Amino acid sequence: MRMAQNNHSNMNNEQLLVKVTQANDTISASAGAYGTSAAQDTALAAAEALLSAGITAAENARTASKAATQQLETARAAALEILGSVGGTIYYNPDVSNQMLADAGYTIHDPVPTKHSPTQPLDLTATPDAYGTVAFNFHNNGNPYPTTYIIEGRPSENVDWTTIITTTRTRLKVEGFAPGITHWFRVRASRLGQTSIPSNVAAIWEPEGVVLEIAA
Image (cartoon, rainbow, N blue to C red):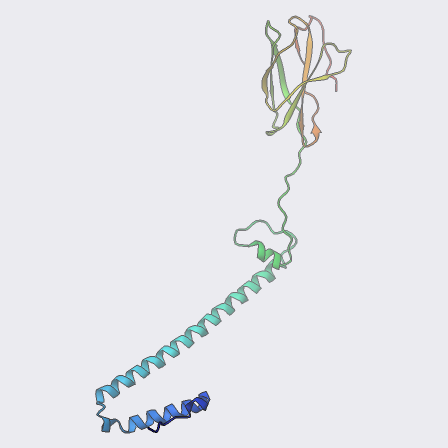
């Protein structure tokens, strides 16, 4: 048996397209001979129209997307230009991202808290009981937590002040004092490596007629 072999495999896309077009034209010209109805021709035309409309819609969507992207880039460039012209400091704004600030040439720094010297504690009182426990109470005078308070004491104005206790509280009790023995106290506030001037002096079992001057 003899077999026919086509040579389509040797054709490029453009040549194949020409062949397909010619075949379609031949089929359309002989449609009546093969019994193709007018309804089938109408359906084929409608399908071709829908395909063309779909291709057009896809192209329009692609064009619109490209335009929207271009508008976004234009707005971003305008925002960066404004940021670059407003000065050396940008205060926090949730609408301005860190990346936008960086793109505009700004260096982002975390805010550094302002250092304030501790203030002098006020109104120190020292109240002893019969067992040698002393209750201290004073006013922080605006010093924030966790300011450290240094309670100092001495048994006589002729000796130096020594630290009795350090605490973050303004009300506390300290044990270990000899009942009936005079002792003077003062308190300082300490924060951020700085120490305030001392508070007023408070005494326990102070002898009558003794006036102790405040020593810095």
